[in-house]
Image (cartoon, helix red, strand yellow):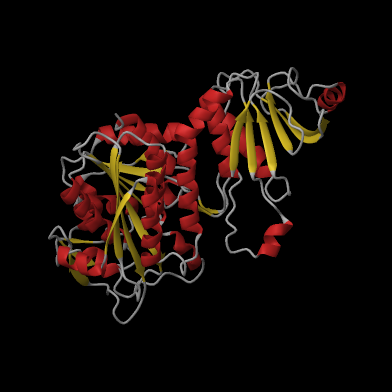
Length: 484
């Protein structure tokens, strides 16, 4: 996607969006357009809008007129995204967005560019060339701004790199499971070294030596070897403790012996959405040269039923030494994260740690597909993440953690069981993870089962299925709280 910023002036081709409070005083003003606005009853109020064609000095433009009204702050990102999405599949390849003459700041202009880019995203890697040629997609976005230079800088220094991370994460989640499996996924992460990210991959032999039997147990039924991938970006002060990001990367989840129903099981290729968010976040951090030390860890496994697969009732010993009775092999993400979280805190001594996972269907019952659930014993980090969600638009909502929920995990046969029953399923999952994190470490778990993958969304910036949720959230959280 080509993104550029320019000074005021009319486009000569493609489509153009004008956001106006009056309908006048823009580059396409003409008697014909005034007549069209009158016929459409367009007065620049919030909700006003119409489409027409405008003849310029150099050609003809498909023109979208949108009213901003007298709002204190207009959402230029969302307005631009709506128009960009409407152009998908139309054959239109260019969009010019006019923010000149409005109150849009350089940051607004940069966010408008990001909104258009995310709305124009399509996953078509496996479409044939003939199919792609029938409907070319939006490939060029120009934002016209009163301060094009500052707008370009805002995009290049933050929103563009973060957008690169979102797109990378979406591509990972949307890829088929015969393309993204643990080893292939790890190989793809290793290419991030070109951005200044140091990558280390632990295979099963190394994890076996470390005692990661909780993670390894999940992949026993798969022919594909499990992996733990560590990404290090050190852009902060030398020797300063890093922030740790940990992601669940179940590249396909059949449920194992506790087999899932067949209907829609194909969507379980997206059960690695938490890991994709961490990978995408690391790309954003590195490409925008964030002044922070960050380590990202993703546990990559494939959960399959097989003669060697883990059984309900098995007891495994985690890296922490705690024992787990596996009562349900479909509650596998927490088993992967248990060892990854313990390894992260022991190996890197982080100042704070956040994990993301498409962990429970229960969070969808609680919050639907609009908010991700935040769980933490630390009020400060929870507030930081909720605030970062509001700013980034990756929205989060805090849910409780308490001893009463923790007791639901007690087992007569081991230190704990991996499920707590039907009640409060997303909370007991968080309590399980909390048993592998030191009490004095600021830590939060984010359940993105409802936001990381969606089959149909009202948000124009989100495609069908992989959303890339979490990349913007994590970058904003680190920028606001951990960058020097």
